[in-house]
Length: 314
Image 1 (cartoon, rainbow, N blue to C red):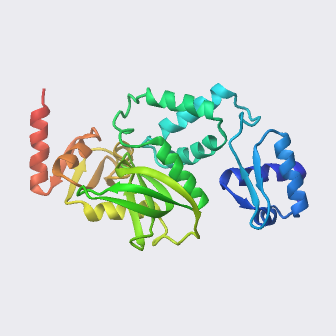
Image 2: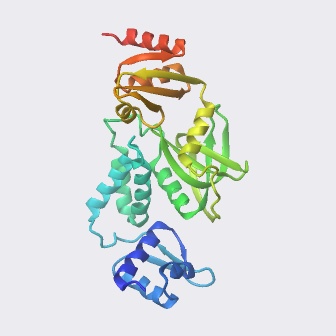
Image 3: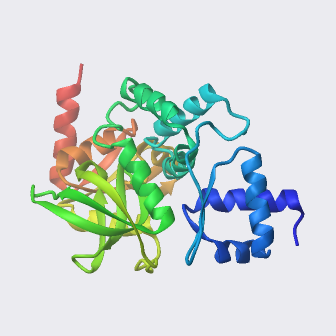
């Protein structure tokens, strides 16, 4: 059996990573008896962590919002700064940072007192990113947290959804994972009414709510949520273009993100393949790299690049 201090930290980690634990399951994970588990729970409460318990059949434990923050190394101002920072980084284009930020934000919000949540929301409402002012448009941070927690806790969600053709529908979904791709957020989940896997753009979702109904997690076809979203996007795009740039592949990849496929040709040349909704967006994608274009195809794409270059010439 692990020492009392290490076991207590392990218990706290489990409570933070899952909304509700049945007592017997939690004891099994810690390899302790129910009596020892109750003592460890009391120890966390003595340290200031608000652990709620439900008695009876199916009873268990969960980490609840408290009147004050648990005695971590954060004071109120630091907790607010942390939450706002996580909200900002949730819109970054750096690989994996956005999704990790949302998971961390869900943990912080779970134990944050209501007065601090109001301060976070007030700061978020009046803060705009100068680096990527378009990134935050259409993404509701409260919805992100709601769905992130539902993914973590295997709880069904409901929401209204507006499709690309304007059709509005109500959806019941078993959420699987959040994906940040091309400065947009997507939810990958199992659509209960359509009996199939779907990806949903967050800027088209409204009235998002967790039902608190638990479900047994299904296996996603292919196993990779990001690849699932990318495959769906490629299937819907009407324009496929290729360009060769006079720049190393890694530099171009950092500039344009994972929504453009970049492969190296030589040390100082690379090939860019783009699936887009329109020719103009494919032009913008290459333009964002800031690198010289050596060649482009099909011919109409090359013509569009020249047209944009001539119009923007000063």
